[in-house]
Image: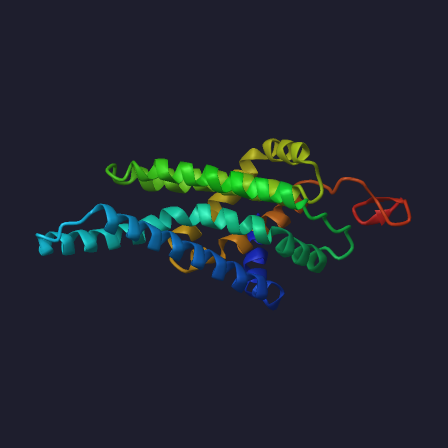
Length: 237
């Protein structure tokens, strides 16, 4: 597993994925900025204390710090949305380069990919907002944030990678059968969330890592080649 993580990290910064990495980072950063501007605008609209400038200034400083901290909590949800948009592009490049003799995976239909991306975004957002409510419990909120996102990231990224070769039901069953291994993989990915700027690589790195993990956990299902021959693990039989 560690070898798969190192390989995925190398590929993330290599020419192979550099282009899609820059696109995904740009989109994630734009979404985070939009969310921050929206939150600040809402705060300015609902909190107006012009009669007491010092209070207004203090609140502005606190709000600014809160926005920075809040962006950390929003990053998993934003990355989940970005991952759904770029998953097939990242997965295809990793598959064709690392496993050239295997049949390529199939991109998800647009509506299905959009559904899973939005569902994943909403789920991660709700979980992280719940974790945000535990800010007054030092240490506990960080642990919950880390463990919850490790579970969500590992679950969704693995299933998305597996669905290029399997039905959603088969991908889910495979993930459950290897639940501990997949969760440990999530524990390796989640620390990136705590590092500003570096956490923008999460969609590309997480996808590449789970593509490799999926290949190591289970053989590819049988498929039909262009000539109608049965293909298993890249070999016609």
